[in-house]
Image (cartoon, rainbow, N blue to C red; front, side, top):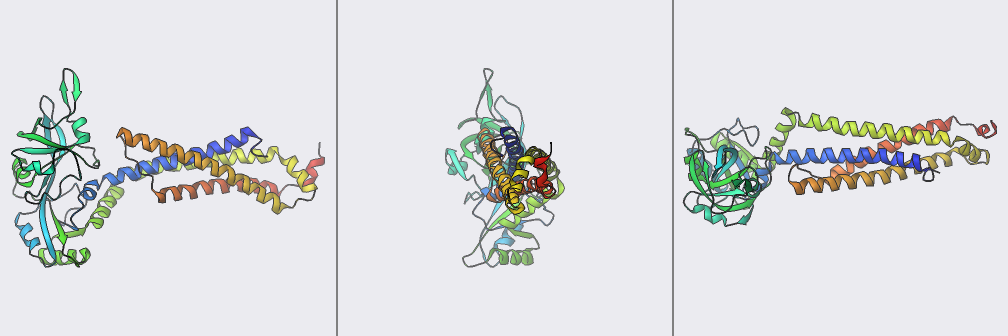
Length: 377
């Protein structure tokens, strides 16, 4: 009955598909944006523990430490190694271009721990050259691209840039996870980074620590706190803290939440109203079935199957469109998008609720239906 009524069937499917599309798309973009907030922590995979000042509440709000704190951390029992990390936003200008705010990351001179996770051109060891820097691929082709004869030319190996009015040579192009502000990312040696940074007494941003074999990172964090008085967090704890700060103190969750709620309500209204109208238009047919001896339980199961079928088709279409949209966004590099399995499950539950409410409106009408409607004019 439902599939043959093309208008009503497509209306229910369209309502559910719209809800599934908007819920998965907006929630997927939200998840992607929030993941960007701690992408630098994810990219630096070697350390087990991040040591910082107690005032730090998220990754990009670091309070610099004294250089002597590095040695204090290294002296803690259970520490296999500890290396410095400089991370701050500095002005970078390509040759013939303009200054752009970039995330400058200074990595350990000896071990190169903290460097880019993947090199596209050059080698990470090339950072040991005089005035060498490595630039991320997206930034090299975007904000730091040079303008030659009116055309945009991506920054490449051998090109020169100015970092806070200090000369530097690009020796490599890397691929990193996009940061929250979408700023270009520039890597250099720690000693070089602190020399080009604005002068101040304390420049050590973080201390990256690796636990010895058999030492629990969480227990090592407690040991570092007691021995140095500094804050120490495992990688997962630091990610969660950064996530929580952006969730609690920015309007991002509210904005995306409103979009998801809107999609849910619109889908609920369209699908529910259309399915209810479908039942109203077929009351005489349903009444005929009841007059022939069909019980209400059978009719209710029939309605539930119709609603579930239309909901499953609509959900599949909406989820597919959201995945295609997310794939396109990721290829363009404009917006982050993460379609995780918990999101798929949660959106399926939401669509199931829409289908259930749509069927509920029809069930309410069927409960009041009398078989005598067949004989009325």
